[in-house]
Image 1 (cartoon, rainbow, N blue to C red):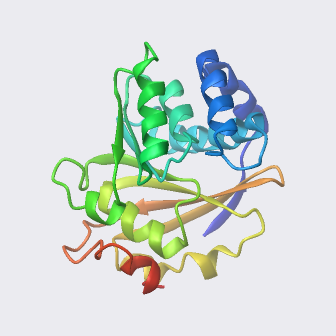
Image 2 (cartoon, one colour):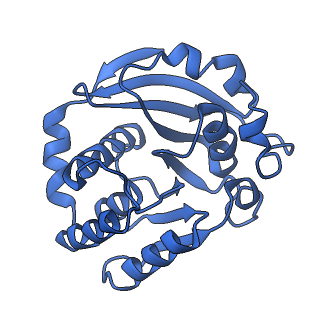
Image 3 (cartoon, rainbow, N blue to C red):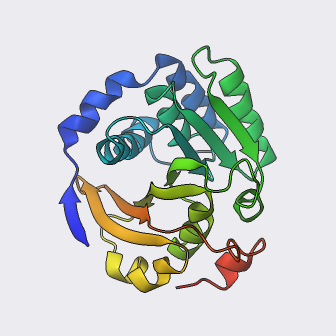
Length: 226
């Protein structure tokens, strides 16, 4: 597995594609406590890393993407702003957060292809309209690597790409072992750094996921595969 540095200038250029409407929405999300303590502008910068990585891997905007545990809309809303022609699904289990996201999407003229879905990934990953239907999956703070992999693979088409936010000093071989990922049809590709602040793990869907996965709600976190 390779390690590479994301070009900071590329991310800065992508900033121009963030709709100004989002700044108000994300400021409100921050005030509501949906985004954590990191300044909003830094969170946007982090989210644009997902955009840069997936565009490089997909040769442009993916046709469809689902953001797991999108919370207050990062990176989900940023993905939507950069890829208005793509199917962008914002998924979260919180009623308050999804209500906020739906309100944001409803008032956003260029968000016609956005979907906000409330529910648990373990259950939604078995839904016929969602299972293995997405070219890309993103995860900012969904959970431990094994949980993100098991749930994320359920949404990803074979040959699709998954990008997961990582601590910048993480040891990828320990957190994303090839043998463990193989069980859910994934393979580690590379770990990418953006400056010294952000890290991303890139995964590729190599085979269809087995019908056993994802396991029922709570089990992937309580009994991780790796």
